[in-house]
Length: 100
Image (cartoon, rainbow, N blue to C red; front, side):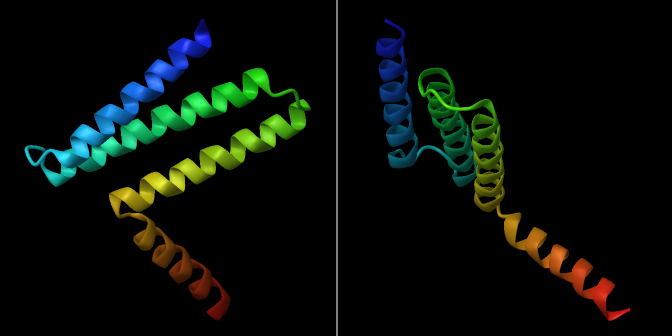
């Protein structure tokens, strides 16, 4: 029964994503925020499914969770438009440190 709820939730998320991106009534900022929230829901459901139903060592699960969280953070920063600024800032900090 929980698998049916998960499938229904993913179908609802897909429908909401389709509606938000196809409708011209939503401003661009609202679309970005809605897409971020929907992405977080899908990734969270997927990670929960993997952690619950895929048998693997605890250390591998921890590494997988860390990699997924980092990837989601990078994706959110890219969608918001802060990733390029963060990379430039990191480059300035590391180049400044090595030049002294």
